[in-house]
Amino acid sequence: MSAGQRPGPTAHPGHVAIIMDGNGRWAQMRGLPRQEGHRRGLEALRSAVRNAGELGVRILTLYSFSTENWRRPATEVSFLLGLLKRFVEKDLSELHAAGVRVRIIGGRDDLTPDIRRLVEHAETVTRDNTRMTLVIAFNYGARDEIVRATRKLARDAAAGRIDAATIDEATLASRLDTADLPDPELVIRTSGETRISNFLLWQAAYAEFVFTPVLWPDFNRAAFEEALAEYGRRERRFGALSEPIDRAAGAA
Image (cartoon, rainbow, N blue to C red; front, side):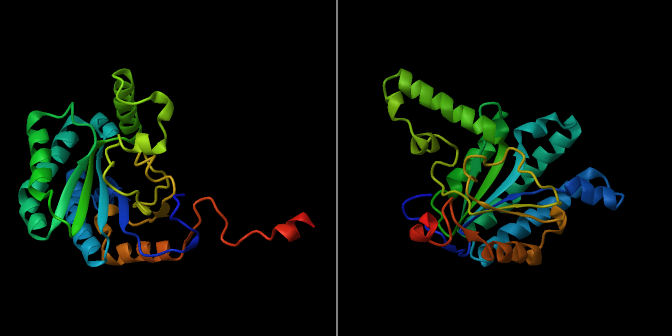
């Protein structure tokens, strides 16, 4: 809990993060190939970005491809990478015109040159936009992120740029992929699963979580609004109490 945070009624979240889950099950339930589920999931992603902007969300972070997703069949991985390329190529100009800044978080060293160029191009073109920030977690895993941040700190300490004894939470956070972003207030996971799957482990320490049974391709504006409404019913205490302790009564 930072110095400026106090327990109290929960305001509208400025930063929402979503674990987009359920594409495969959506397709399976309809007797369709998994690729169709991913294709429909991309449409849901586009819808979520539009809805987030209209609903006043300033930062939307979407978990699009994890470090563990490389273990999927090669044909599915290739299809997912193709969807990413098509999304950037088709939607970037529209996002830019709408004032959306695009940020990509995740490891980049092992990306192919064409994917890395695509990522860098999307960030460069939109870097001065201020209406909304769309964060795409691609080739992302929170443990991997923390390991990479730790290596940066180790290199800085070995080079004498920092004193290891002074490393604190803020120092580590400044080496994370999200160093220039506030932590999410709300994390949504679709499809009914109730785990966070190595997503924003550090940043979501005090986030509110909403687990919805809605499969990602069906996550529409109504589902988004319901998740925001559920967040609004929460009281964020950040480890404190909602009411002051009556010390005199407690001592009695």
